[in-house]
Structure formats: structure tokens, C-alpha cells
Length: 311
Image (spheres, rainbow, N blue to C red):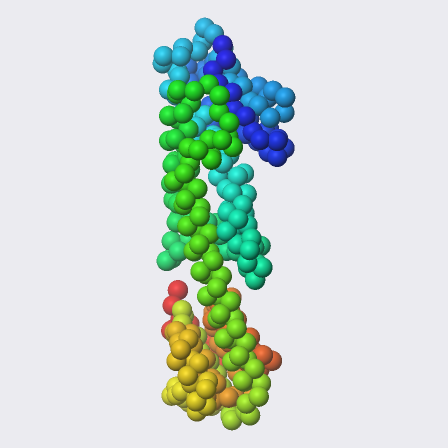
């Protein structure tokens, strides 16, 4: 007995085997006979038809629609939702970006796509790391799965493309919001990089005032500046009015230490840190190009930094 057929558009035929595998594996997990044997082996089978259709066939008499049907629809919905998230989500984001900014040649579509990917998969959020990504991914998947389960319980033909277009409006709106947020991040980052380039240019023109400073990174954005004899140097704003105004306009926590370094204009900077990969360290290296040496462990900083450093 045929239960339902899932159809993919022509451009997704290459991934039909993955969808069949997801459907089969999810049924293997979710559906069991009363005696403990797996329903996927005895009760339902998924067949690929004409390279773009998958048919779900019930094996009678093992399969009973009134009792096993709801479990099957829930299982299939979960597998198809996983397919949408893993195979189609990035393509959908790309289409949204291209439609939204096709008349704006200044927008780098590939960069905005990367920002979207980082927002969905890469960036850590408030120390939650991957826990946020997994939770948010599951939420989006469940949103799709719920709609699919209701649809499969009523219909026997599922066209993935049409379903996404007409039944997943809320999900598509969420992807549009992600694109808009990624654009904001892109614009802010671009402005900040231009700001950093201006500071780098100013530093290159500026005469050096002190031969050497030690910059101790205690953790996060917490820094302390010392001279070559490890005497504390109090931070002070740069004397140049234009740079001072630039920093005041763009000021954030990491700019405070950059402001002090620009004011001191050292010939050489040694940054003592246990976290050389942080963006604030890379920013200092960029602005003071060629003047920065990064130390992760030396006799001058070992005891002090190990006592101060935040885990």
C-alpha cells in the first residue's frame, strides 16, 4: 500500500539519496513493532522513483495505518525537516540575499552569506558556544517538522519546493530576519575596518615617543600597560585632536587600550597574553603593524600573568 510520495525539484535530484537515507534511518529509530522488531525492516519501505520522487510503501499486514500511521508521519516529518535544514537552508538564504540586494552592487553577497552561516553555525553567543546553535537549530527544525507532520497526515503528495513556498512562511520570514541582521553586522564590521585602517595610517605617520612598552592582557578586554622596566604607565588619551575625536566616536572597551598606545606611540610593543587568538590582540597587531610581538609565556610575565589571567 502506497502511503505518500515526496518530490524534489530538478536542481535537488543529486541529494535524493540523502533524503531517502534520512527517512529510512529516522524510521529505524522511531518505529518499532510490538515484539521489538524494527518496523522499517518489515512495515514500511522508501523507494526512489525517476530520480526525484521518494515513495513510502506500507508492508501489509505488519503495518496498521490507524496505530502506526501517526508514528510514521512524525518520523518522516522529522527526517524531511532535517533535510531542509542541512541541505536547503543555505540555498534559501542565498536566494533571499540575491533578491534583496540584487540592485546594490556594493554589497558582497558571498560575505553576507558567510555572516549568515556564522550566525547560524559559527559564532558563540554569550558564552553558550554550541549549546545556543544546537538549541536554535532544533527549534527551527521542530517548526518545520510540526508543519510537515500535519501535512502528511492529510495529504499523499508532498512537493518540497511548493511546501516551503506556501506552508513555511514563518520559517522563511525568520531566514529573512537573519539576512537583515547579517547585513547590519556586515555594515558595522566594514565601518570598523575602515576606522582601524585610518588609525593604522595615522600610527604610520606618527613619530615614536617611547622605545618600548609591555602590554599585559589579564583576560577579556582587561589590559595594563608598563614601560620597559615594568613600571605602570597610566592610560591617557591621544594628544592629536582628530584621533581623539575618532576614538570618542567609535569608542568601545578595546579602543581604550588602543587609545593609550596611540598616545604613547611606542617603537615596540610586547603583548603578554594567554589568548593570542582574540580579536582585540589581532586588532592591536593590525594597527601597530610590525611593532608588535606577542608573548604567551616568558620569564617577565609568567608569575604575574598566571596569577591575574581569567580562565
